[in-house]
Amino acid sequence: MVLEKIKVKGMHCKSCEILLKEELEEISGVKTATPDHEKERVSIEFDGSNDMVDKIKKKIMAEGYKI
Image (cartoon, rainbow, N blue to C red; front, side):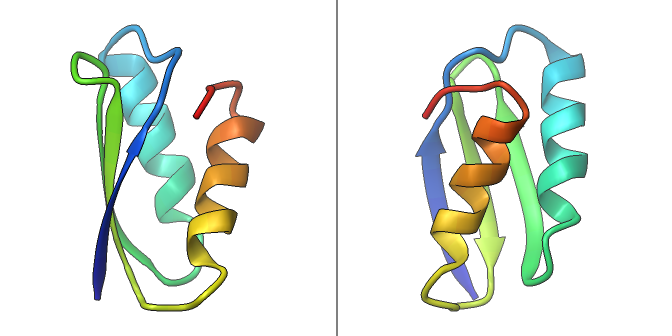
């Protein structure tokens, strides 16, 4: 497993965290996603696939947040 921390702009509250967590954990290969709106980042544990970070970033942006 790989742990990646990604800066995310646009999360304003716990509801944003819950939404993003649910969406990211639907991606095959993602074990856990822990968004933190106060620190403006999400910590993600996932398998070591080469294209996984790109998939995660695309999902974050598709939900309306900025990286």
